[in-house]
Length: 278
Length: 217
Image (cartoon, rainbow over all chains, first blue to last red; front, side, top):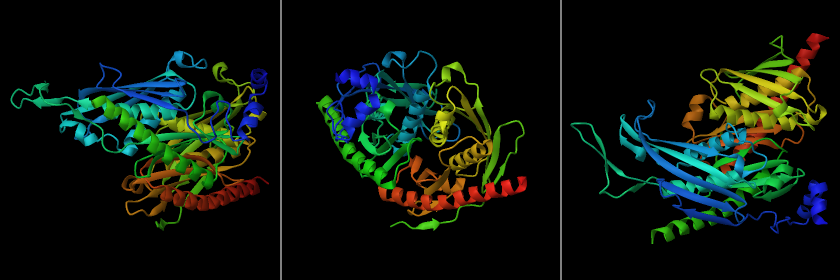
């Protein structure tokens, strides 16, 4: 019976749940789905991570490939990071094969903003030889299953993969100018200490605020907002694109919840990274 | 406690109906930053973009130099969903409203200028709207002072740039986007001073429409 009700009147179905501080999947309004993170899942990449929300509902795998390149003329002593989010047709019924959708491009840009704003990669440390050779990190996030809240999943996968990334030592022969990978020396990590974590919220019926929306909830939501926080409680991204208006109180509520969520996820990723090492 | 360093918006100016072939158009200046917006709609829609229950809003953003890339696409999406919120899209199902934005000159606060130009052009086109929208950019400088409507130099030197769009009815936040690192207190203060400044822009909207209509009659 509930299934029929949900199909015929999806908005009313959610309204009945949400007004009683409950969600159809059993969560409370401001509760996030369980997260599974594994790092170093792809052996051929320089760093990788897989993030699953809610038992595989949303799955994003991210690999980092480092490449030696000549620096951009305006920043001769800095390497660069090129994030790209792919949404293949296999991840959701609503997506079609073809060139990157607007959603994929928006997500790619959001990841680029997140990395640059938070400073989670020290671009200066990616420099091998100023003006001649720097590392370019190609960060490719591929969505395998899309059940809402791609922004959080992508951000978690990208940041965890970058924290897993190590680069080989490089020696340049001064006389011949030949570049050689020094396999004897230890690989160096690229990640800086900053660890941004994104948390997304949605609004239903212009007044009910809830966290970590699923694809169904996203389709019914009147607005969504994404907040990225750092360890010290400062913010590095707050993105709300249109949708119903929010008051400063609601935004503050999102920020406060995002900070708690940030601490949880940071603890989880650090634990996973530590267990990998030993 | 951070204080407001520059509480004035730069001088703004607007000229509506500057293009003859579009349904509505406007140039909006904020200081030296100038954006030209043209609105066509409701017009025929491409089949792939058609919605049965509402009009599709299509924003095309043209940078001053070069071809639009990923960043411009993200800006387009941001402006698109902001306009979709304020337009009564349900009145024109199976059609499209096309908004073309041309950056003419950028000396800071470009995104807010784009949104303000959009709103003026939509008003000029006479498309039904739920409410008006205006945007304000703020910057937090290295000392934690808040600067309203910053120039490019101030944006570059500051530690964070925050842009907000407000609706004219409830003064709630329709759109917000940020870059750089800032504290949640700084965010709230920027929001409040931007909200305060938005009243001036809405007042300017009213004046410019009054002037335009008095010319007509």
